[in-house]
Image (cartoon, rainbow, N blue to C red; front, top):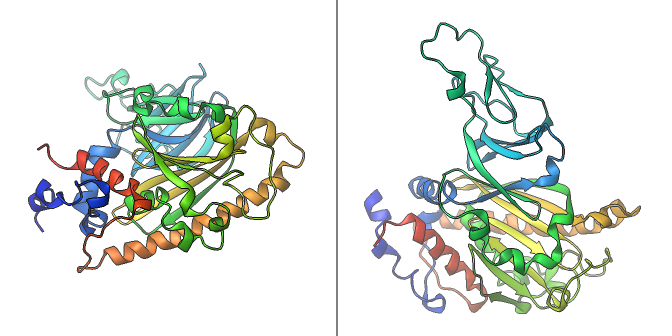
Length: 381
């Protein structure tokens, strides 16, 4: 298939129809390297992306580094306590200045030729460069990324311009304000490498149709698929609300922590699952919150980071580790179920005979995700 044909808007007329008339994306959208690269350039390099929580870097000199859509980045708290983000590539010949993970330092020193950078990004030292003509250290600081925060969440943006984070999120912060996520602490992060396209995982996260089948022995017993409804969103997100009391983060029969103080009637009566475009899912329930960073790692590879977050007062309880283990048990049971079915779907999408399908009313946000992608990947009409 030629590239021009692949991105011809006419190919996607069926996906552009209203949800209950629409067809799914063609299989090549989940496996083509050319399609994937267009998504990276036109979505992930242009949107605000969640990278971590502020409590990961509480003190000046604390940093974490990661691969974000295959770009090495580092996020650091400077001596002025300001959080900054940079490309983690040395400005000399591109060597990665710090490995993925967390740490503490007073400066970043490239291991190759010892170019050294301040926590604020400036080049401090470049050995043996005195004979290089018209070389000015001020021109060779680390490449900065835009960075902003919301309720403890850290977001970065590769490309300048466009809406700020507040405008990007729209009414989501007000909608979730009663959970007071800025007062929460991420107590555990687990990373999964999943053999599927990132959209496969995102779509699965935002439909309840599969719950009765994939999760029939776990969360189907506590929150069946028929309680979930999509609600209107005014911002770069979509959202599900499940009208069932109790914690979405516990399995049937398990007891957990007290409810979050200050929740309203609707928060007490159910749980919210928003997807912040392009690929960050939150689970907000009566006693905790968790997030899924769904990070593209190739056309058919995805890295999923699951963070477990509890109110700070909850984490200070003497029995916290004991009680938290039942929450971890729930995520350790259901995330592998989602991983398994996502990988199995990806294997099916590789088939040459795969054809677009139709949607159930229980997965009406899946065509919304498809159209979000098409709006950005296809050429203007």
